Length: 473
Image 1: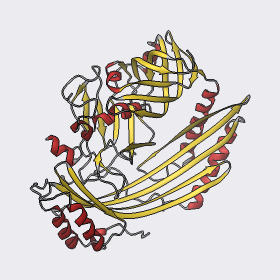
Image 2: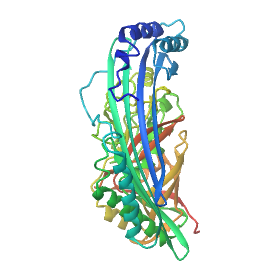
Image 3: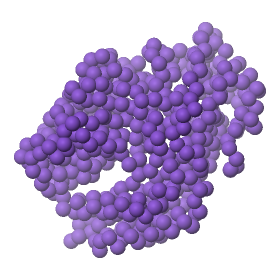
Image 4: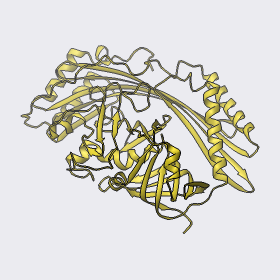
């Protein structure tokens, strides 16, 4: 693939010709654009003492969208050519019909730069990446004789996008992404447990291959695995739960964040639909979605419709004050777009999606919140979970959690799951720590078959009345 900058409207799709075709497709439409993309990615997996796989993927293409009211026509192609654009125009045009719409104003331009535009894949020699993974493997094995398996993954990608609107506005964004993950398995007396740690963001690989960074990740992965070696069966029942800071915000993201996306609320399918201006959480709870944090995994200079990202307050002091919006839903709901129109690739139409979603901290000391638990658990790490958007009901598994009785932290527990619904959980928050933190940069979010990188965060949160599912009655 060409190493030159991706400039499709100066090469394969000359701007004057592309504009003519786009304007024909959007005559009488409310909105629309050509979204052109070039992407390349690399992933190296070092497992069981050797390089298990090395993959590289490169793609490019475009999508043309025509929006008319609640209907959107979308056509895409890997053939970035005028012939393919004309065919796409004919298809997308079907959604416009007789038209009658008024073209929406273009997004306000921005010169803001939230991350580097350097290619993280080509910036570091391949042998250096392999040697780093080899060193991680050796280091993790040397940390403890009980380590029996180590896996390390180093991944990098570069996404280049250009958006052309019928009014001639062109928006460009170059989005790097890197990530390093370390997993270990330990064995003692025939029992095996695992732990993992990782992170990254819209940065180069330099920081991730720094020994100080990956050694800390390896030690953290080992620490979690060793904790789980001593874990006892989790209790079951309705009890108090303290959620740790940072990554446990994934529960906030899933159980609450999706329910605050504009399309679910416009259609009335969210548990939060129709509750604007009402108290939906305990006093003191403030939740934001912020795509403007420099170098973060979920950040975007502009969204995939060309709207600059922003910090959107969703819940303020417990009151619902906003939803995340793309351009189509914002227009239909009579509000402004919030820079949350995201898509997985040129082959997908945009929809309202989260960026970095987090809860602001309070004034309590985290240790005081844990000490306030009479009968419950302290959940520090989370794995996968499931959520029903229509009612907010969730089930999440804990990867690191501890039994707490009468304010005393006891043994780690294994097999704990948290069960509840987002709306009720928000109301049951009774304490917020002063330790708000963002996750280390490892989140991906799925919606309607599309995956995009996201960030989460929160302080230590103390909640009443969550159902804990475990193996001990």
